[in-house]
Image (cartoon, rainbow, N blue to C red; front, side):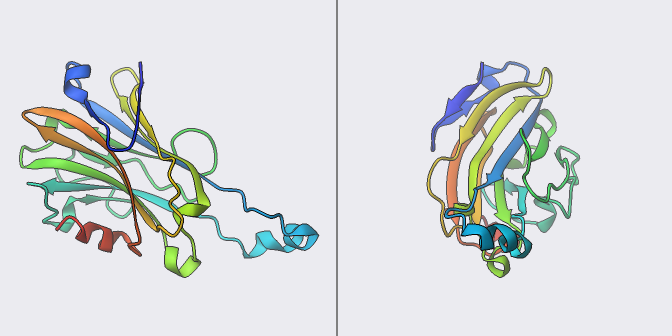
Length: 202
């Protein structure tokens, strides 16, 4: 049965799911409906100037808690880590529709020993230029699925108001005493892009 996590809550993946190897990290979000319809004029003309919010999920792989090499970033521009253990399943440009919008598959059983943490982040593409932020996003979540049987192990729904935030640290999968754990982080940042977000872990 899936565990529903609160912000800051941790779960031991190895202990709860013996023999766990591959996990599917599913991330989802929807664009919030604009408030105040803007009348007929807004209905007729509002949509033409509106740009869909393009959220990009990424995995930042850390050694001893630090980001040391740009090849340790798995994102839409580098879909597969050099170790072959972290794979981004491709970019979704709008976040429309049900279920996961983007997925990252991690083979925990084969992640090289020098990596102790994998941080899952989402940033809004060209957020500053497009004047977009996470206050315009709703129903955001991160969930972990056991790839052996496609069963959801845990899910964290982000419920806070993230207005003004352009990037989000959704959660982190980390190794502790030989076991893999997940921490529901849910911290928003004002980083304008992925590069700045990565600098937080240098």
